[in-house]
Length: 233
Length: 172
Image (cartoon, rainbow over all chains, first blue to last red; front, side):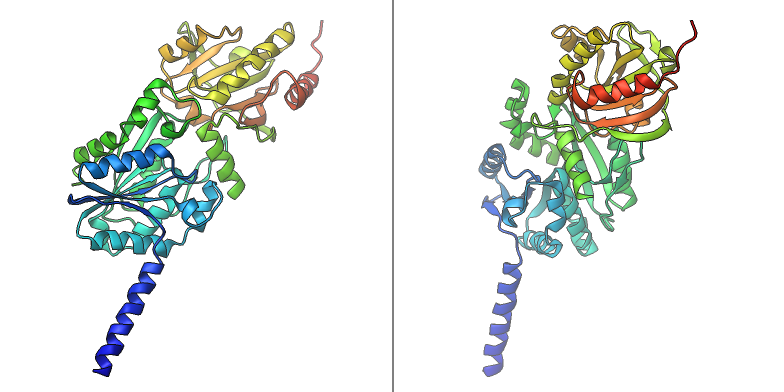
């Protein structure tokens, strides 16, 4: 009996410890079979992202929305993404997969770095079950004029399906092939989609075009379209 | 590394509040090839500007900081009329229609070149817009500026004047 109590107490402590390591995220529950982990950029989460999460949940896609700079009290800088505890993200991915739903991650800008590094730490079988959508990922360690770009070591991504969503109106667009090569060299299965007439962070622009405003309100549809077209269901 | 990431991200996002990081001097670096066409379809290379100081500006019509510095580039052109300075704006990876739509609203007196496939952008390793290169009269890269500036005043004007002053006196 004492042994059973001790075992239960140990399990409770372990469960609490695991939970304590999870980042503070906002959940939008839904009864469907899909779960989207939405990781906002280093600039923080914008209202249109929350609106899109609500719309997705209404369509049966559960969303866990994570604002890393807010969750870890970090400045809104790309370098802040280096400070995110990777193990917390690994635990978060595992917790999502433990839900039994088909899990896809949507990470914006430099948030792609910790997400990919966390995915690299999953077991191969867990990684194969994961889909990762990256919106204009910034994986540079060096990007200086007249010099070859250098990219972050994101770890082994074998079996991971990665789809890059790249707004056409971006200085990074001409460099997309190099980025895809880098991800493929790490073992990821990569594809890409160009988002025409859009700029990076189009849903949070100070002076958006009419088209950008309209697309901001259709982010849920865009993500569903990409997930379905990709076969990540 | 943190500073680099910050500068790159700010420039990539083309924040309206973005400021130039300052002119980076280069040790007389050989310039990459420039192979572009102007709006009339005429091929242009750096050889077309040989003997002049060249201000080569990579920009795009969707980039607010790029558009913000355009009026100062035009003022610089007017102020430098008759002096051996060539201002060349190279539009990065857009269609001629996008560029012409902007030029219909903003009259520019300096040549605007097209780089629809981004090949020049890649050759010059431009990762943020705007990025500008100042070349001396011998075609070597002497300064790089990532981000916008007011071209007709302050540090920009001083740097341009210093390159103009380097030019050997032409025999009469």
